[in-house]
Length: 131
Image (cartoon, rainbow, N blue to C red; front, side, top):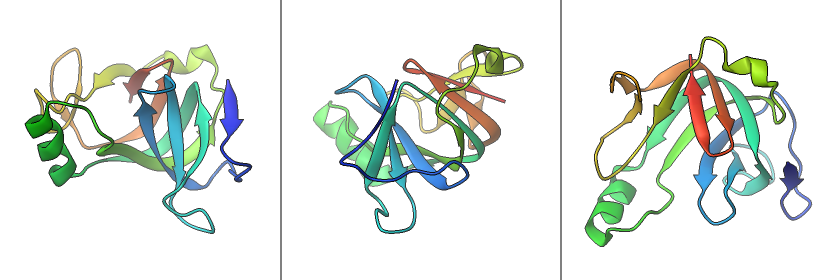
């Protein structure tokens, strides 16, 4: 499922920030340039990004920990490849996660190694997979 937000535009190949939206159980896609810079432009169930850097606002993380509540303070920033990736895209990707209450960075779930950037990131149905 994919829906533009407030009739805003989105193009494949543009650099975007993506975060998991806990209110609608989708991924929110934020423009990093243009008319809608730093605004949500779309929501999607599945997203494939390339050349990804993971960003965490330390002040937002501190606030989340102090208030014991989640807030938007962590993003994957990368090039938007598609909003409907094939399930075969999972091959050669490992599950990743981020939890502000237990970790200072995104990490691989299988070995807990920190993850700061990746060539490919698949976000699908609330889960994340990286190269």
